[in-house]
Amino acid sequence: MCLLLFAYRQHPRYPLILLANRDEFYARPAAPAALWENPSIVAGRDLEAGGTWLGARAGGRIAAVTNVREPGRPEPENARSRGDIPTGFLAVDNTPMAFAQGLAGDRYRGFNTLLFDVRSEQAPICAGNRHTPFPMAVGVHGISNGAADAPWPKVLRGKSALAQLVSALAEDAPPSALLVPAMDLLQDRIQPPDTSLPDTGVGLALERALSPIFVQTPSHIFGSDRGGDYGTRASTLVVADNTGTVHFWEQSYLNGITNGPPRHFRLPAQHNP
Image (cartoon, rainbow, N blue to C red; front, side):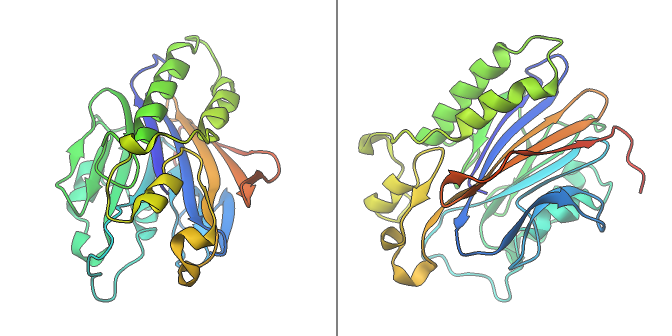
């Protein structure tokens, strides 16, 4: 997952509205969002490492993870898959902060994870192994492959667009009213100017290729040994209402082209373990 945009308590009916793009090498095997049996969640599945980038559970429990871009940093020995973090949170009932404080961060490559439970009094928690866990303030936020709300062009552009989307949403609007504008936002391919790009140590060509909200990067940008073409594989909209009901939509892409209609799941307010 390379971009999370979310509005926390910006709408009277929906305490969390989350938009996300998962960027990955096209050759890495993955399954689209589906209902898992154990744990009982809705999520896409990374078929290489077994975890997920974003998932939700009945009762209003939601988790996502993004990688931190830090080229050249040594990896931990026998590193765990970061995709295990969302599934781990969704399988238990700890508060978001308690779960975050129990993460063995030194066992993972760099990450940020967003943890939310509508039944908890806690705000969404941003945890990671490059900072201590902290609650996100009421407002509109973005996390890409750096610090939360780092002023990368895609984060700034996405936050601004999401704020406008939510402010235009009627108080009695159904969650489905968000689907088309959210997917339009997540398919934004506008290339920001080079002068606004971050310097994360990957070189200008790759910074440029990864800078739009929707990514399509040919293999020669990464180098032939990195796994081929790379880009946005899935866009997701997750909406939690005040009762704990969660609506989850996922749109898949094949080589940057929409692949079938969005899949939709409704997770009830009551979780039955």
